[in-house]
Length: 125
Image (tube, rainbow, N blue to C red; front, side, top):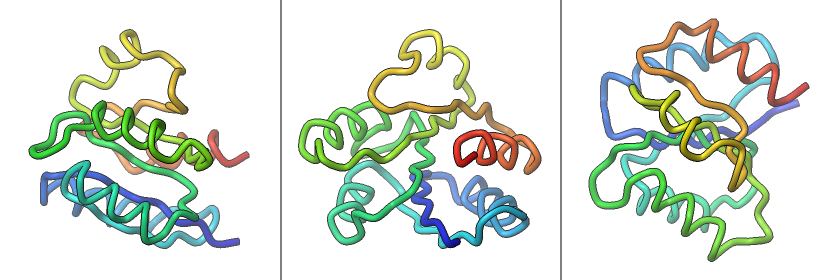
C-alpha cells in the first residue's frame, strides 16, 4: 500500500535528511511531498487532501508549524491528517501541546532514520 507524506521543512539540509530517511523506509511505499513553510503546506493540502501524514517543522518563516496546524484544523476540519512535529525542541513542544490537534508523534532533530522509521511504524500499525 502506498502512503503520501507531506514534509513541511524550511531547511534544505533537513529536507535532504528526510528524503534519505523516507527512501530507506521498508514499510509502505511512500510518496513524499515538500513545503518550505506553512503557507506552502496549505496549498499542498488544498491540491492533495489525501495525505496520510504531515511531518511538520515548528520554526519556519512565513507561517510556522503551530500556526499552520491551527489553520489546518480550523479551515479543513474534515481532513483528519495525523501530524508529527519535528524540531530541535520537539520534546518541549510535546510538553506544551501534548496529543492535541491531531499531533501523533514528536521527532527531535537531528534524527537518525531508524527513529523516524520507528515513529512511522507506530503511527501506521
